[in-house]
Length: 391
Image 1: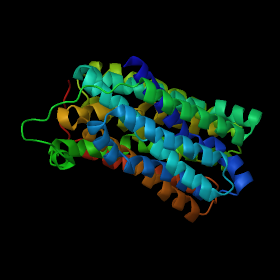
Image 2: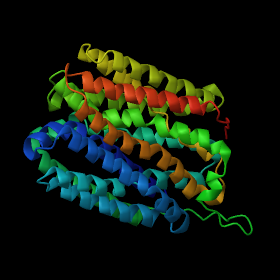
Image 3: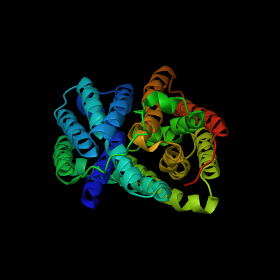
């Protein structure tokens, strides 16, 4: 079980890498393929939408056939998407490739959470969930300065071909080493469905928090950091990679901090609320200081990376209300609420960037930062009506 979990968690490192690597690749894809910022923002959005749309069938599959087959088969599709990316000759190929990679990455975190929920005590779930996201955030670090160094040394196509091989090998390892936990029995006469979950009013404020807790940092670190620092501050791939590295480190530290902080707060609601309130503050700071020197924007983004790392603990808050026999469908429904808004946000922000004239160059980016700030504040307001629960 431990080897299988290690394989799933490494696959999640790849998932975090793929959702963020377009920020560094943006300049070279623009030069080689003629891909625009809107093209690449859409490609990033398609990754998240494909990832999200797979959550419902993945939840069913986890409950029925288990994580081994679910994760290994889909990650194999992701490897095919990486191969298409490496061979791309047009922006359309990048978009299709990102859809396939999104499908491949979709099950790996939820498969890990499914194993945690079925194998370990409920009291450990929040810590394990946050730690997994923290380890996965090393993928964010790898997609920053290390990626820019690999592109400079080997070229972007050879680098992505190498990622294809790593992804395919990870899918095979999951198939070989992951073991499915014992199934949970449903209450007598109850099979259960998503409708049972949607009829639980306690989950809806948590759905709202899931919708905004990860969207800003995923959208900014996943793509907009690259165009913003290139267009406004004149950074090249190495400079963008360095900024991404600092954000990635902040995300790793933040994810590992949220687990122990849960014990200090003696509950989840206050921790989640105040952590995301700080995220909103940093987002408004980024909006108001979009034309300031680049070190100020970097500090704001580091703050968003740290305080915006609450995904695992929000997931743990929702998981505390899930019936055991609906665990697979429940965690994937929560994940769906967390991922769909990112895909939509990336497409919308691409349109914002196209629509607002770059006079000054920071103007379209300031509008994007404001959108993330306002939507996160709205989700945080809805979360006030949530019920706290600690395991």
